[in-house]
Length: 284
Ligand code: C2E
Ligand code: MG
Ligand code: MG
Ligand code: MG
Image 1 (tube, rainbow, N blue to C red):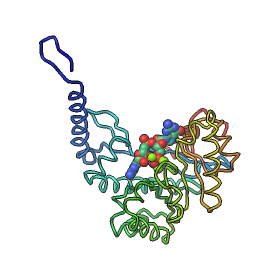
Image 2 (image 1 turned 90 degrees about the horizontal axis):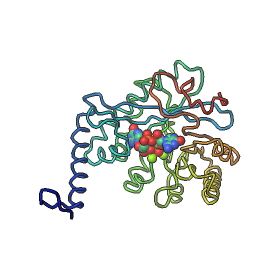
Image 3 (image 1 turned 90 degrees about the vertical axis):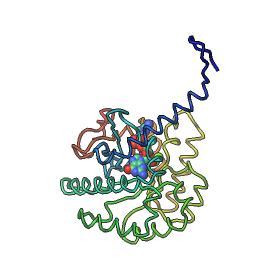
């Protein structure tokens, strides 16, 4: 507790708690209108085939710009949207926007192009989720193989049964399922045993200190080896340096995603042409 010049006292604890509550309340009240006010948009981050350096798709990543709050990162508002149920509407906005964009790119580009979309547990709780996805693919005239849905271990733990059915139905349609942020949740390995995934995404926390950390190198090697043994496509997230790129390439990781290959960007140009980080011009 501190004494102020006017003689009153103030507790740091109360101040901080109040500030945190105010901020959360502010975020929440602005988020309610974000969709209607067109404040949400998508950025797209390319991922490349490490064998030939070709961009083969992009991950759709939500962006929120509010005139008062400025840019708010998904880490600050996705959990909030999950708590108040708004993630259903927001998730639908993401699906429509990303699939429409992917369809456009598939028509423009003379090559394979995949769109990866992050899915929240609440979206998957809808028993007609797979039908909903199938309808959207028909609407935007995209083949199911062009879509990859990214789910995290956290969601699987909450809704084991529902997730299992949803994953199976989606895969029967030909849609690929990716286990995102692999290695950061609980019992990662038991998920690999319980569900059949198509892709395993190694979390950025293993990749970003590969140069300095022997243990991270061993863990990354082991994760890639497990993925390959299980016939999964393995993708490394958060690749930022040529050393990290060389390491995962040497370990025969299939795909890479990270600032080295390209930061998330708006959809003005296909992620396959230009707008990639100047750092890696030599790749393209
Ligand atoms: P994620 O799905 O694991 O996405 C990858 C995150 O890593 C993105 O953060 C991306 O911008 C960031 N990233 C990619 N490469 C690098 C790199 O080289 N270095 C660094 N430092 N970061 C890199 P972002 O866009 O802030 O998204 C954070 C998380 O929010 C996502 O993690 C995902 O879990 C969630 N999210 C984003 N968009 C959506 C969405 O449309 N729906 C849902 N349900 N969740 C979303
Ligand atoms: Mg993801
Ligand atoms: Mg991830
Ligand atoms: Mg994540």
